[in-house]
Length: 190
Image 1 (cartoon, one colour):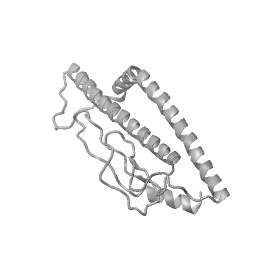
Image 2 (tube, one colour):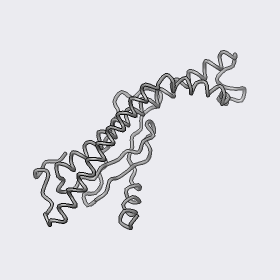
Image 3 (cartoon, one colour):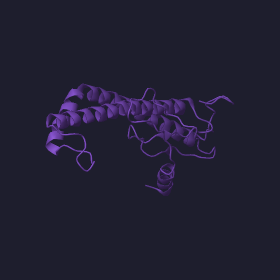
Image 4 (tube, one colour):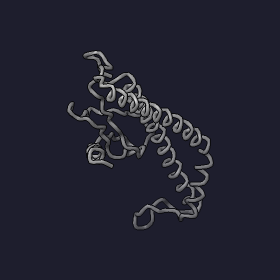
């Protein structure tokens, strides 16, 4: 890793972005954008802390001044994939938490126990009792997870190919001495 790459990775990990939403109810609409925007002079993607609901780190993608149509396509596909993945994991994690709480409640009530002990602490189940829930949850959602994995691999394969095309295009432009052409009209931003 060279100094430029190392600096880039450190710089992009310093920015924070995210949103807060109650975990007690399912998200109706998953907001992805914030009002935050990196400085115009910024040349890097900015990555925030893990989202509270999806556990994924949100990314604000850098938009080059003279972004080519190929670079724009790549950026839009990356953002769309991030939004899609965020929505999937937000919903999946919400469902998991809700079903886990229901399982714990039902197991405690079948033993004739309340949710809290005499000292007011929340009761828990043993790891063996929770393993039954985890296995049942994974078995029940196996098709959904397999479908997500297939889609995720397809999207990332496409992103990788587009990244290779952008790198080859930029290398060719550098070798032939071409200047960077504008990919978007003045005053128009995406």
